[in-house]
Length: 353
Ligand code: UD1
Ligand code: UDP
Image (cartoon, rainbow, N blue to C red; front, side, top):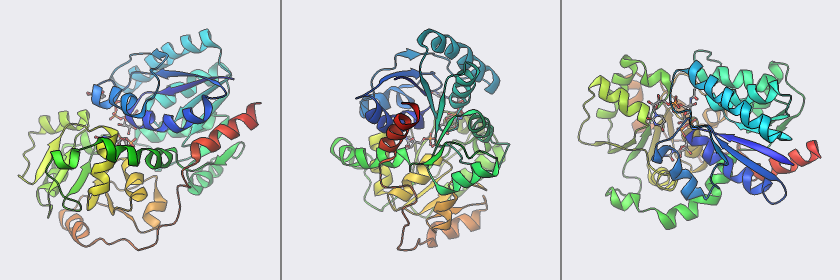
């Protein structure tokens, strides 16, 4: 089979690796990088560490408004699909690269598989929610991380070719954690100690594009009761600069870190506070208490399990949770057992061959 895999943003590079490992021995996988993320630390760093083969195509779309970025990916991808005539297109997650991939493939009647299908925040102001709903409605195969995703799809009338597979991000964590420890010295370099700091990431439009919310996040971090390490997404760095944000001495805003450094930073943190979908799940994989700086989450099972708490941006509420949140001892195996990539490979063969 000839399979085109589409990636474009940081989490998609990580998500692609275990599926590629399952597919490449028996099939031709053509990797298309849309170029949505392009800084070294947002893109090439992941290819280097995860030993992802260089993309066969880089569409080099770069940043832009949603319509412009999605349209450029769509137009350039259509050319690639017409030239390559693949048997299957794989998209993942909920980015503009995902949406454009879904539209390009389905308009050309090429079978389309969506990894991480069915996740919903039920907040249509989130650009990612639109990307998810549209992609799922036109995908032919839906590979779901959680049982909640299967129920979400059923509510929208999508029940054909829906499969629970677990989380490819969990596959990546299991595979890469030991390698990360062999390669990363981030904890020593930053002078940190195990459980001696909190790790924070923020990049959602709802937090970065709203000066009131972003100021409140800065205020909360400035009142945090322990050192804070904050690797800032370029979008967030720009918004912080625009805001003229001033941080207390215990808050260290650093550049985005590599995946290996991120795993080690997460694994040594006492607590994680984030608005990232991937980081919420990684907190769960690594048994770290997680405060989600949003009003809702797609990853509701982590909240139900007692390991993740949604945080209204109220200083007293967040600080209280920051100091007193203690998750239960038990952790249900929500995300599978690290074999999602293998399962996806097998299912694709059963469905297609
Ligand atoms: C995108 C996804 C989001 C995902 C995130 C992962 C959409 C709608 N959103 O959000 O779901 O969680 O990726 O990180 O697709 N920028 C750089 N260098 C880069 C990339 C981005 O400077 O390499 C800056 C640009 O100013 C750009 C901004 O970040 O305008 C936002 O980038 P974009 O890819 O549009 O959205 P993300 O916020 O990264
Ligand atoms: N990540 C990273 N370096 C960073 C911040 C995040 O390697 O400085 C990783 C993180 O471990 C996770 C993924 O990027 O695997 C999450 O991406 P992001 O938060 O950008 O997007 P989301 O998951 O919210 O779509």
